[in-house]
Image (cartoon, rainbow, N blue to C red; front, side, top):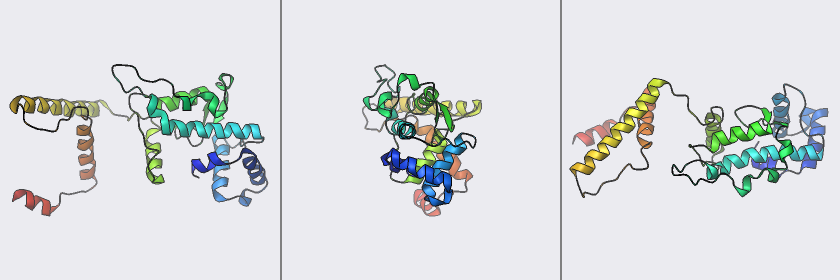
Length: 233
């Protein structure tokens, strides 16, 4: 189910739907059935869907909290090495999601968060910040293709947006960065005053392209013979 649709729903309406779902799961639409089943799964099979308007508001608050960090977390990310990064944002204030400081130790259900289906509110916020607000940040909720957004969530949230690289992988990435920087310095020294397109600020593009080429080759991609002939000519 699209999270935006859930966020627009009235809590009383969700409560009525849940009562209906509790009596007969087949009496509600497939999307809502999956929604309620997700909360039951996140609580080891115990029904935890809202049973009052107040609880419904809390449920919606958790969904809204996760959605907003996905959408705006990059605005408070630690991206400036010189400091001065924002650590708060007016749209990420806890009270705007229906919670207070007293709720931080409350266990909440968060089945849409790929890392884990439930956590204390304090822990959930820490996990969201670790995923979207550290030295690597992403802005992707503007993508219109839902499958692409879901793919990014599935790959970022379980690992807190920190790819698991072994020692050899890290050394390889480092070597490509050193090589690219060295080549930049060579061009600057050899061709003084000549127009060129620098990598400065985009060095990460080199290991990215290296990985893309390796993965494409491993998947069976081959260079076009037409391009090879054109290059040879």
